Length: 258
Image 1 (cartoon, rainbow, N blue to C red):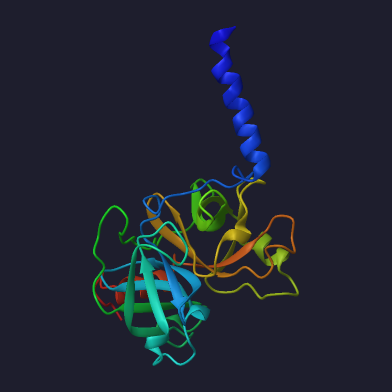
Image 2 (cartoon, helix red, strand yellow):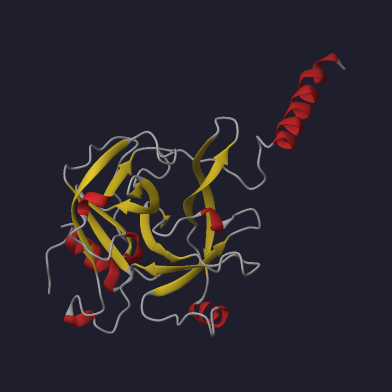
């Protein structure tokens, strides 16, 4: 009987912590080591979007995450290597901002390219906390285990930190039906939902990279409807076609072929 006492105390303690908010249901706190390619895009000294490191000086994010005027580089900073929002890690000044339009490359005029890229002044210092990831160029499959890092409040430390969100990609027809009359799903656009009820996609930012097996498959470009539907869908720009090729070319992973 005495041997089971610590076990019972442990259960009671966990229950009490949960009631106090320290163990949030669905919150699976993550370390930046699990998503070392993820960064925070800060605009006017405030966290604005997420993004992903794809080269020594390059970051990919959503098109809406940088200023309309791409000469306003002084407004934007990139924070890399931190598990916490708006603190820690290394803050990088920006050298160049690039928005892609449908006509960015003639051979891809028919595609939606809802991404932008940021070039930092000084190359990233790679470590277990800061690493690049290669965009995937293959077609998405339902067999892959997708995940991303949103943000949740760590009540114990009173900071906002990374939270793991497991994801499931929807078939294109299902995605189109879900947003019929709201958004026209075209080109490289697609949809993801939480893999389980505890996976809250609403914690993810625009610009958040969605990954599987160490590769980036998509970038969140719209989460406006995540609370209006019980499945909490987010709209992404998939990197399997034109977007991924543009990202790899700009990040100088592959030679230019166009």
